[in-house]
Image (cartoon, rainbow, N blue to C red; front, side, top):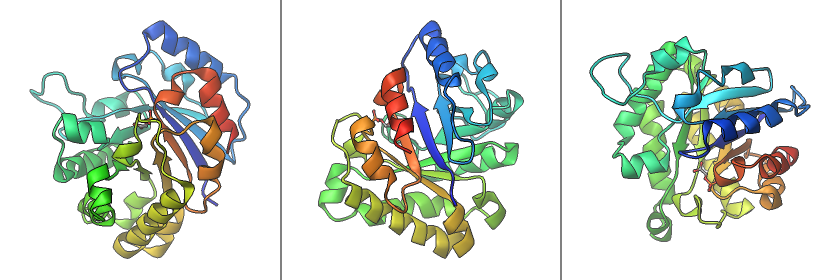
Amino acid sequence: MRKKIVAGNWKMNLTFDEGRQLLNELRLLRLDDDKVEVIVAPPSLYLSQFSFTNSNTLSLAAQNCHDKPSGAYTGEQSAAMLASLKIGYCILGHSERRSMFHESDEWVADKVMACFAEGVSPILCCGETLAEREAGRHFDVITKQLTTVFKRMDKKQAAYMIIAYEPVWAIGTGVTASSDQAQEMHAFIRSLISTELGREEAEEMRILYGGSVKGSNAKELFDQSDVDGGLVGGASLDFSSFKDIIDAI
Ligand code: PGA
C-alpha cells in the first residue's frame, strides 16, 4: 500500500520565528508512521536551522534547487548542498517557477537528475493552465511535462520520485479540482508511469494533488484511489488548517 503524504509548501511566507513555532507544533502531533508522512518545505534560508524536525513522520523539503552541483550561480543552491544538510526532498517544476522563472521541461528534468545523483527525492510538479484545459489540451501538457523527465530515468530511480499534480487554475485561487477531475488525471499519470517506467513502478509511486486543498475538501480528494495525499500551499501556513488536512488521511 502506498503511504500517504501531506506536504506543506510555505513558498516565500512566514518569518523564522513563525516557522519555528509552526514546526514545533507539528512535531508534537502523534502520527501513524505506517499511514502518513508529513513533509514541510520552508524557505531554504531556514533549512539548516530546522533540521531538528526530521523524524520518521516529519521531513523537510527544499522548494527548488539548481541542476549544477556547484559554481558561479549567484543566489542558487544545489542538490549536493541539500544532501549535505540531510534534506531528503526537493519540490521541482512548481508552476510558479515554470511561469515566473522560465523553467522549461528540460531544465526541470536536469534538476530531477541532479537530485537523484545526490540521493534527494524530487517532488515533481506538473499541471495545466485554465486555457490549456479549456482547449482540451490538459492530458497533452501533463504528458510532455512528465515524459521529458521519465525518459531520462531508470526504474530504480522511480522508487524515490513523488509526483504532484497541481492544475495552475487551482493554485491559490480557492477553486479546487473536483475529486473526479483529480482522480481522472491521477489515473492518467499512473498509466503514463506504467508505460514509461513499468507497472510496478506505477503502482508504487505516490501522486499528490495540489491546488486549494483545505480541511473541507481534503478527505474527498484523498479518498480517490489514485490520490496519495496533497501538496498544500496557503493552508499549510497555519497549524490548525494544516492539521485538519493531515487528519483527513
Ligand atoms: P495552494 O498552493 O494550496 O495555496 O493552492 C498549492 C501549491 O502551490 O503547492
